[in-house]
Each structure stands twice: as C-alpha cells, then as structure tokens.
Length: 64
Length: 311
Image 1 (tube, rainbow over the protein chains, first blue to last red):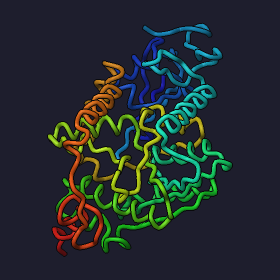
Image 2 (image 1 turned 30 degrees about the vertical axis):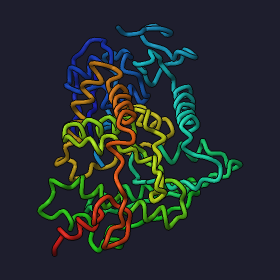
Image 3 (image 1 turned 90 degrees about the vertical axis):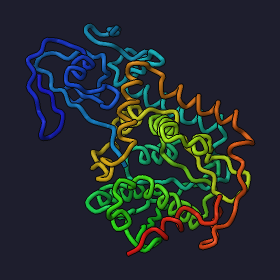
C-alpha cells in the first residue's frame, strides 16, 4: 500500500490487510490528530486497508 | 475491537449502512458523510439554543482568522441562522503581521466571506498598535502566544465594536478548551481558570460565545473536508515556542487512550467555576489610566505591553 503523509513523505508499505488505526499507530501517529482518505474517500479509523490501496494522512492539529 | 458491520470487510454508518467517514468513539457511532454533517449541525444548533448563545436581533461578529476552526464556525452559523430570526453576521479578521504566514490565511478568509456574502472587516496590528506582531516579538519569541493573545483580543473587541456587534463568536473547539484548562492548571493560574468570558455583569465587555466548544478538532476537520472547505494552511511560525503545543500532544495522547478525557476536563472546570462563584472571580473593575478601557488594575494589558515595548 502507498501511504502519503505529505507531498515530501510518501511511503510504500509491504503490509497485509489492516485497519487504518493500526497502520497509523505503527507509523507513530495518533489517530485523533489526523483524518485519513483511502483511494480518495474519507474513511473512519476502523476501516480495513488492503494492499494496493492509496492512503492519505492529513494532519489537522495546526497552531495558529 | 473493530466494528465490521454492513459491507463485508468494513464498518458502516449507524444510520444508513453506507461506508462511514468517522467513528465517534464516545458515542460508539459511525457516520457517513451525509449523516455526520446533519449530526454535527444539529449538535451545534443545540449548543446555541440550550446555552442561549444567540438570540433574535443579535449582530454576531465572527472572529475569522481563515484557519479551520473559524472557517467552520462561519460556515455553520451562516447555515444555521435563519434570516427570519433577525440575526446578522459580520466577520472580523485580524492581520497580526506575521510575515510569510498570514497572507495565505487572510486570502482564505476573504474568499470565504465573498462566497457567503458576509460583511468582512480587517484590522491590522500595524494600524491599531503601530507595529506588526513580528516587531513586538523581536527578542521575545518565547512570549509570542501571550503577547499575540493580548493584542488580538483587543483588536477583536475594537473590530466588533466598529461593526456594531452585540456578541463576539470565536471558533474555539473542545481540544482548545481542554488545553486552556490544563495550561492554566500547569501555570497555577486559578483566576484565569475560572474566568468565564461569556458572562459579564458589568456590561463593559462584549460577550464572547464559543458555539464549537463541544466539537473535537477531528470532527471540525472532517466537517470542513465534507463541505469542500478544507485547505492545508501553513502553521504559525511562533507555534514552536508555545506551551500549548506540548499540552496539545499530551492531551491528545490521553484522549486516545482514555476517550472522554477532554470533556471531563471541561466539566471539571465548570464545577470549579461554580464553586468559586462570587469569591475568586469577584474583583473591582477600573478604567485603564492610559486608554480608558476596563481592566482590573491601573493599566490594561495592552498598555502594559506597550510600556515594555521600546523601539
């Protein structure tokens, strides 16, 4: 699966099917601090990600 | 435990079985986009109604930075407030003068107000105080958030006054509120902890309202994404000096491990506020000897700050 954390940080993961939450935690990301899309559609953190999916992680906690 | 209701291999909206965009852990509910928008708007409308935040005839000044929370606030109020109720909206944007940061969010604010047809006022620190924030902070970067907060609060009050507003609405969310409580505890600032900015018996301050204070940051971001109003904006360059950044990360970790933590913190503050009513927060109001604004001491915070700023 392809994990897009930012324009400059794109990771290809050799990972079996797993929930979004598990993938985020393995990358050291708190699921509450991001929203996630799978293949262009927003998904909840318990959605199953399959090999071949494109997962985009959008950080929401910005200071201002 | 992961829910795999509905379609094989995935969870489903608790109301219609469509694929969900969010899982609200505290309520154990999944929502698709349509039902999440409806649920969130209903909760904000309920907060406004049950707390009496907005009444017919109000002119609400919305503090619109152009960031996600204030954008969501303006979108929601524009959608929820019916013209027949006689409530009018005006947006106030403060240009603090942060080089390389505010330009983009200012544009975002202008674009939104034009799209919604809402009156928009911009006030800059340079016009109001004589200097941009960058100049105030030269050599004092570690105090950035408190200095900016003092000046921005004053600028918003001036802007709301010029716009003839009866109330000032800000986009503070549940995460912000819980962080503020914890920061005041960490600083030992009990007075600020129990100060309720929405209540003012003296009539000297414009009441402030926070219609999004029960929504999490994640819910707001999801709502904006669904309303096609999300944009990735730059982070304030002074954030790296802020205590809030550390508190945000810590609290977010707690909330993940112990759902409901942030709400419990807010409830605790409300209980402490009730217990302290009439004692700790009762302090005589004076007029600042420099500018005449209401304040608790001889000088208001803005004039105190001006005194320490020598160029």
